[in-house]
Length: 82
Image (cartoon, rainbow, N blue to C red; front, side, top):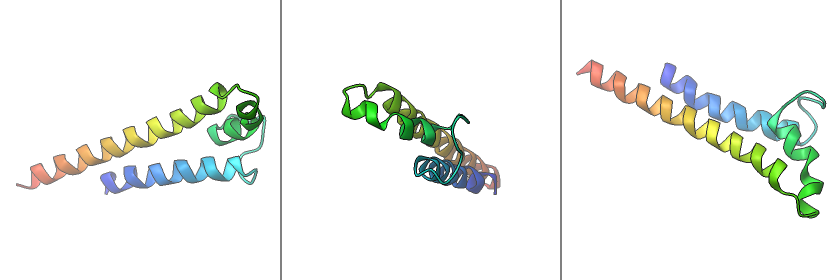
């Protein structure tokens, strides 16, 4: 059950960032990676992609890390059953 929760956490994090990016979730000035990407999308067009890119990379890294943790927990649970 813990392994499934870690997988669902990744989905929830991406969903929260997407909703915040669209302006329907967390509102500025509250810190959120989706808000950070949304606020800095004009910087991408002006040649300053680093703030938006950094927030996007953080989302990807956290989701992948939590998914790897979930896979390890699942593998450990399978090994304990044997």
